Image (cartoon, rainbow, N blue to C red; front, side, top):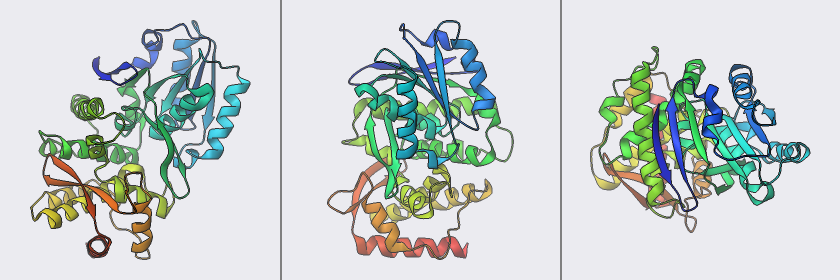
Length: 360
């Protein structure tokens, strides 16, 4: 088992990575909780919930709820329904919530924990590659129809328990989604490791050692940045590389049409194009495009997609300032920077970018 420590303004927690950790949950709980409430989704429930229950029930009273799989469950309605279940289950301020699932479950369960009785402890148990990013750093949220993650908080977990055995059951679509965030980390790290990721073939079974290495490096990048800027006032914004357009695509197309990582992959391509134009530099646009294509990422977007709608959604992004689009760009590989891009320039580049995706 590998472990990474993350320090925040309110606590310090360990990210534990290894096989079979779901059978050892009691060792990661260092308080005497009155009750435990597990939040999971309909995909994860039959696969891993029984194992987690079996590891906890000898020592703790445990209840759970199952939400429909998919981004649409990260909604105000589902959130309110869970709060009702939590109240009816008798949870108090000495209780613990466990988020068992991918990024959607982690964000939703974390927001429940952050707001129930003004905040109770929770543990992240990610079961997807994508969640190596979302489970670390303490950002929890639900979506609004006008934008992704607009209702949320900074609320760090007590622990992140990452059982890598759970990654063997996720479909290719989710593998693609998760590796997009690893690619992001490889681009923004001051010692870029994109060349290593570029060799990965997601259409073949992933090698455990290789996957563990990439996950560890991605989490280390995230942890280092979070420790320096917990509340996203400065360099933590670099973790949003590819997310400005990515979030806009998710909300414009409807949550669930693209996975989060698939949308971010397109967003990274666009961010690189903007970077090349803005800084007059050459970046690995073509190599990223070929890697995405080789690994069957959905790159072409509907020809009916409206550029002005995308721009307006980008302005509603949490990073936007004074109705100006703020984008994380790259001066060079491994040198991210946040820049304000004028509407006229952004519209021209986005129209050209969308045409190129269709033509390819």
